[in-house]
Every structure is written in structure tokens, then in C-alpha cells.
Length: 84
Image (cartoon, rainbow, N blue to C red):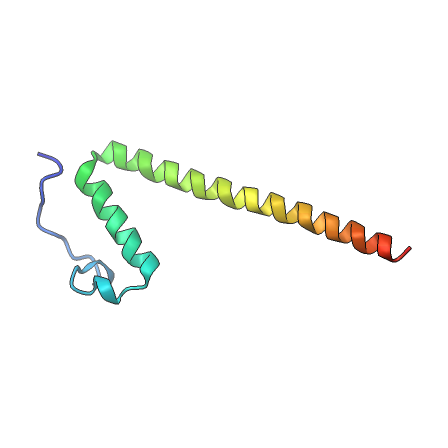
């Protein structure tokens, strides 16, 4: 059955369980999330999860860009008014 523990395939040093604590926190978290996704969901569900995560991150970055542009516009306007 899918989701039962299968032998772990070592694809590189970063994916070894023994060295997980030696990894930066964000890499350790990514590996743990990936393992959970693979263990609990079917491949099509895994794809949907990854697509959703990518979309969320992309939207958050876009929102941040918009916010920073608004701040920049306000600062630019303020600077222009100071020079009058």
C-alpha cells in the first residue's frame, strides 16, 4: 500500500537521515515536509501540493513587491514635496 515505509533511496548527502541535524534549518524542514508529503499522499496529490505551495510563495512575493512599490512611491512623493 502506498504510504507504507519503503527503503529510503539515497540520492545525495543532503537526503541522508543521519546528517539531517547538520543541515541548515530550512533544508531540514524542506526534507521533513517532502518526506511527509511522499509518505501520506499519492503522486497526483503530491503534485497538487507542490503546485499549491509554489503558487502561494509566488503570490506572497508578488504582494511584497506591490507593498514595497507603494512605500517607494510614498517616499518619492515625500522627497519631492520636501524639495519644493
